[in-house]
Amino acid sequence: MNRHSLILAPFLALALSLPALADKIPLKDITLFLNELETAQGGFTQINPDGTISTGMIYINRPGRMRFDYDQPDPALVIAGGGTVAIFDRKSNEPPQQFPLKRTPLSVILESDVDLGQADMITDHRADDVATTITAQDPENPDIGFIELVFTADPVELRQWVITDESGSQTTVILGEMEKGMKLSPALFSVLLEVQKLQENR
Image (tube, rainbow, N blue to C red; front, side, top):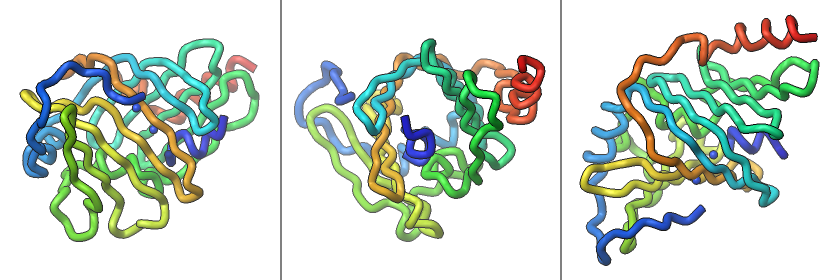
């Protein structure tokens, strides 16, 4: 699996039973949802660029922190924290690949103050009979790719996203039911601690 694409790129088509002709969720409501989201955790299913499927648990602690803990036999662990995204291979003794969070489309939703109304951030905003999809990019770094976020309404919920990286590779992540508002240990998002664990297990 291309781990760089995995992060520069994270949800299957939605199979939700909702009324037809759903109204488009306004950007201000989506912005409010993202800014009010502090902590969340739940299962996810990921479609990788090569068509394989992975599952695991996702942990979100805004601003700036996210963790993808993949189920076995997938050895991957991805952590966003401290302004860095680190991609671990837990079957390898090699150090993790690391990238600045600002150089990934995930930075759009992990900002401390999400502003979807800023110029050139939203390139598409559409709705079908199931959900509302927005396409967002970092207006300062449009070359790093973009993220498509899929929301349902009443109440607004984030259901999936598709990240397209600078090479055109796509990774889709589908969220399961997310528990929100819990306290999450800072250790979950510490790249340094995970590096130390790898060294201890050698």
